[in-house]
Image (cartoon, rainbow, N blue to C red; front, side):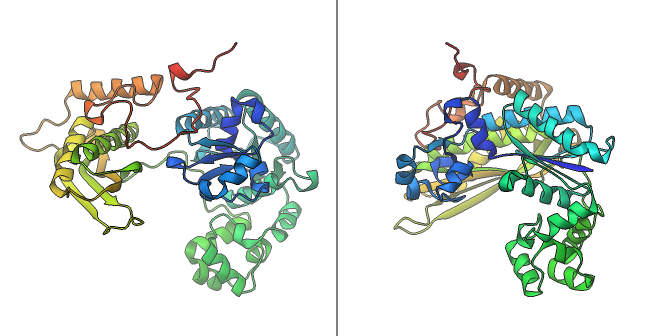
Length: 422
């Protein structure tokens, strides 16, 4: 059986974890620069606030209804996510971390009749030991587990209390008949329109559609695999190892437009530091560094967009070398005058760190440099992001930095922001 554990309104739940006074109040979390809502509690949804809606459009509504609004605090969310994942790995050695708030588990050591009680205990244990509420869906395949989890979230008239177990064909059929096809995992808006035009409105109808050629023509091979998963045939196995990224990028919009080369250099260096940390985390090196920067498409002047690439002599994961390459590309393409609203960097042509191809005259990353980068990552992981950084990144306070005026403290990733007990 496949188990899907999904944290409810995860970012909001993390904020509530250290603020019991807002547990029953509407809560929302905003994107970078405090732009749009990226997480909402049920109470906030009930007020009509939509996912992705700009905060400025509903600011008055939020103030009137005492909505607790937070800037995104991803270091906190990642830490809480790791705690949930760690607990799941104690239960099973077959765990796939699907996203920051979702994980699939494969279990095969339990009788069918025990599944519901086991799920209730697991849900209670996660809430007790980590502090975030979760929904649990259990079924024979990933698609069915996703469907079960969606049912678990609904809590229709108290019927589903965060748990939905499809452990028999009878339960599967009931669930499929009431589940709209557009809500199926892997079925997008355009695909759902094609299915509805063909008279297929529910997951049950898709499962029992006998014209397989028609389904594959409308939804490609993936659609046929989804149909087989609805029948209980596993087509998407548990992925135990996360595949390495082929490219790593880091970009942000600035809180204010930048007009000087020095300001852009500082921002690009900061983006390089973040990207290199991810590069080393997956034990890779990069051979190409790209830089892009542009003005805002909404300002009155002409739209300006620039990009440049630098090929390194040999692949590296050293932040200093990558910043140097990014600065070269920036200097080559910088144009004075425009006010740049966004910039970013990209690390391309990645390879495993132990398979770097050296040039005849290049010794690659020296052992002392590799150790320095490793120690820097360890300190930042322990004491908070940016504790150790390249001088090229500038000071701690940056005029262009992303706005996060409503960000909560880094309760679990910064010594200076630990919660105080009085």
